[in-house]
Length: 183
Image 1 (spheres, rainbow, N blue to C red):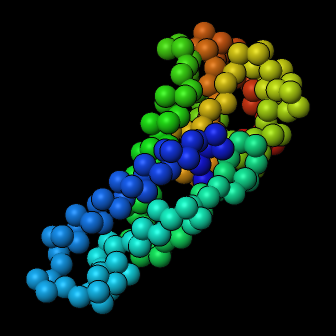
Image 2: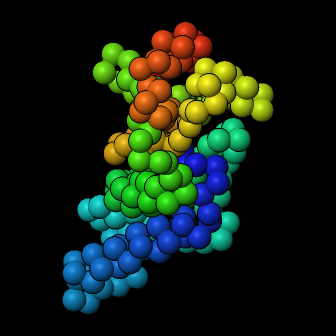
């Protein structure tokens, strides 16, 4: 899962970087007299290899899951996808940090030593029509942003942020308003 508003150019750059890594790996590991079959075998079955079919125009696309998140569908074999996912997560984190800037005094309210996180499935219920529910719970000062925590950036999670000076006062109010959707 990725943010719904991530530009296609960011995804294209991830695919290009991944393809470059595959190419570099091939140059280092290829047999001296490689055949087309050797290349096919390397791309399909080699250690850490992933077929970069996502570079074709019709094989990478976004499927809307909600107004807040999208599913990136890429035509890659399961073997060796970890490198692609790592590059994608890095790009999503960079995009979110660039797009969603918060004032320095914003913090995440914590419950049981965990921040308030909301799945993309509950995003609409959390925000409410025209933002009414989040505005009421946070006195208009809360922000719900895509999670940039390592290992969570591709899960479709959002994290609630509030001004530090209000975090204690809003804590119980937020929990009461959202105990049905807080993950």
